[in-house]
Length: 329
Image: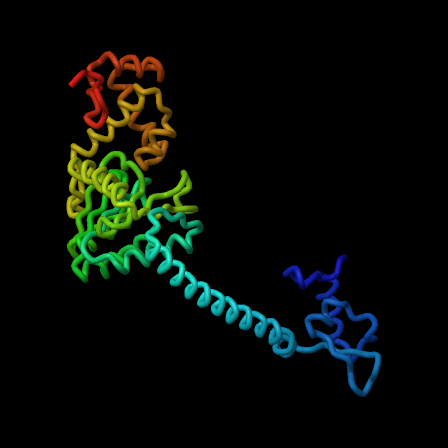
């Protein structure tokens, strides 16, 4: 049987355990026969007055001798990590100041830590208004807890805060609890079937949008007045049509359900898949499938192709007010 390899974090092998049992039971054993792992772990020690022999050492005593160097290395590594992080934060401040002085209008931030630092810096300067759009449905309780702490500080200093979610969050208890708390502090929250993209805008001066499909990998910081103005205008248009989110209302209002179904119906007519529709609405594919099944049963459809045809000819699909209808103005 192979010896233990403690450097790889493996558990003790039977050979080592058996030899340790014998060392505990016998006064002394020949030192040459001691397994390397027992020596490495400090579980055997040479008998001073009987050279060439060894005896067992209690694990607690061995731990004090073996773990101390490891704990010292861990402590030194953590101290070095803190020192490096502190130094980088100092350089980050210099970099941010340099960027502001040069009037740089677009900056890409890569990695969650850099994105978080840039957002934190912008939010610390936010004084009048914060608008956010959060697509994708539910957020984790941990994320909501961090957002509540941040939002509470902003609202306490008089910042107006408006947030757009997708209708899917209305069935998510952690989000309901979060909205109830921030609404009590003065925040405004509304929902729509589909949010155009994740967006954060501070004081209409600086905006953050994701770079690429993976929203957590990179973000673009935008300080160009014209671009920020366009993003705010897009938010305002959606906000005007959104449904106020009142967490005290336990039942989801009919307008929300009909709007979700209408969005799904339009997407089906456009030939989109359930997976694509689910991603747009921030719900699960199963939820979309349930809606499609109920719509199919209502129209007597037996296939996806037939459903698309029936929807297109049934008069149920009205033009999307957000899309051009092709008629001359």
